[in-house]
Image (cartoon, rainbow, N blue to C red):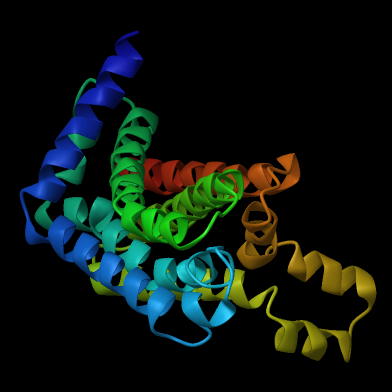
Length: 249
């Protein structure tokens, strides 16, 4: 019970820090503008497709939006603590490193969930224009939030590696780009030219796009859910190892 209380305290502290700075508002505005612009203006847009569906338009761009926006949110989580010298103070408080990691991560993940929830006008619009399968839309939202969590956990890990937010941001973007390109067809074709099917399958198994496609079809496949949760767990575990090495040093 005390562990959960510590996690909630850290999470509340982190959420307040977000909305006490312009970061939260800038992120939400940019994310909503990008979603609206790419859904209704970039071809093939929602109107060109001629069907009441957000797959292939709205959700299609989420892996690319998150590649830049989520690292911008996560880069400060631990790099800022190290830069201002509060990391040592935080780790000497009566909380464990794991509680601090989970608290910070949950706060940031909830913030991303809030930004995602604010895209509800897009859902209203597509329901006004036609009769979409809202079950598919709901599943796509779940997949998008899980994917954002995976990106965020990676950003937590890279933020713990350095005291410079810019370096953390760049490393996160590169890692997230790999997770996108792993399932990109030109990359798959390139690997197929010199590697066997097993190698190709291994590389594509790391693709967030491949695992997100199932959600966009309304399928909550346990393998896709497990993939995103595994990325989150591994990245947060690595973050803990890095932070413990800082404390030991």
